[in-house]
Length: 317
Image 1: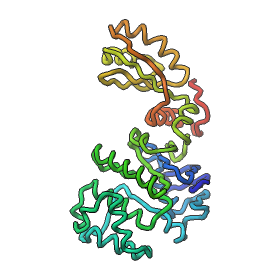
Image 2: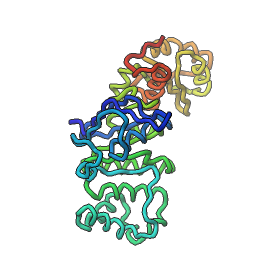
Image 3: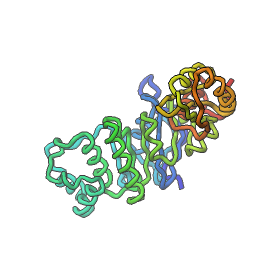
Image 4: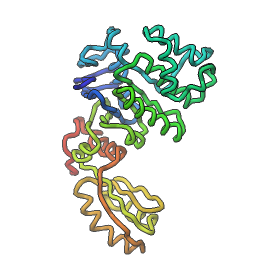
């Protein structure tokens, strides 16, 4: 069942078109990533879905109802903002117990969500003393008080260091499993969403250019990642970067990862032995598999920009 249904959504701020004919489905039980660059329309779309903004055009249904002026829908949604703001002088446990009373939940729920987010040791701390990572965990605890069926998270990891981002993504997976929460997560930090998302929608210029599971999108967009294991990755990677059909080259100590479109991986297989000989590199192994989210995003944006249409088939012309 589609928990969120968005059709032909449009929203402008004066002359600025933020969302332009966007359509989206989020299935119950999924973790969907809404990915795109700054200004793509992610935050505006989320504000409309939770009923904060009204669109200029389009249909939105959440839990099969319109979200605007609908307290029943809003009570079933948890929200995590990019930068969470709470009354700084309140103590962590006291504040969440007040939130429990507002939602008609027992005060014991405050301790439950703080345990879920591993903030048991922060009960008596004031909110202003929490670190950035702890504050985001507190925001998740706050979003979970009313036992929502859906959590909307707008750039939840953008202000965190890599370790804290990883911890927060682990927490999202735990809540998804233990609390049966559906998530819609927006981010412009594309690679880390590989860890948590069942499906993704790639958004740019106010439109969804492609959506679906990672494997499905890789097949539809024709994006592939070829991994070449070698004893001289720097030299080989430098030569591969010069190939006109290659979209991405990443070098590490053990090899080279190359982004290509379907069909071009065959050309790469033909070119690698020649380039390896030139680079005096020994090829240990080579294989092609599903593209990363980052590669899919590059391909979708390439076919989206300037074309004025949603992606349907990568024609490589």
